[in-house]
Image (cartoon, rainbow, N blue to C red; front, side, top):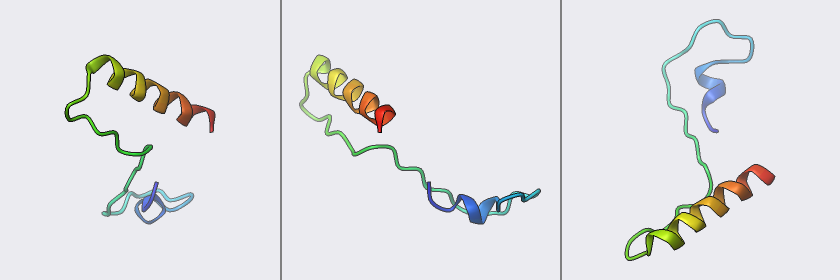
Length: 52
């Protein structure tokens, strides 16, 4: 997460205007994929993210 501290500083009481960027994992190519194998890759990617 990038930018959250600028939008809401630690112990801050007011949210400031700004942008927060949240990156979750790596992009997964979907074009031309079989749904079942794509679902398995997405599931494994999510599972890996929870174990780090």
